[in-house]
Length: 115
Image (cartoon, rainbow, N blue to C red; front, side, top):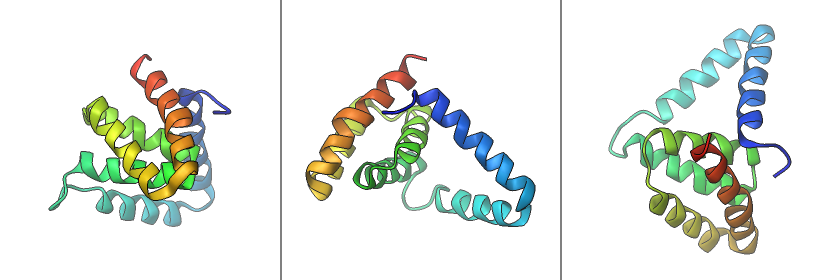
């Protein structure tokens, strides 16, 4: 991982705020849409973030891995749930997703759990 998890989360938040200054309506709509997508429905919020974590691992998106890992921890997902999510990502995404899981995913989990 190029940056520590806390730095990546802060840079993401700062970037959203900066972009919002120039495109307030666009960012407000994006936040509204994603907020709705992650609301509790038939699938609860923690499981939605576990799904997003799996997708992020498969895609190799460090910022999204970090964001959704942070959300999973905040929603009290267990380490075992996170590990099984990593396995699903690897099962679907093959070697690339396994690499992201065992390197980036584990590093982010350790950093965020030990902050």
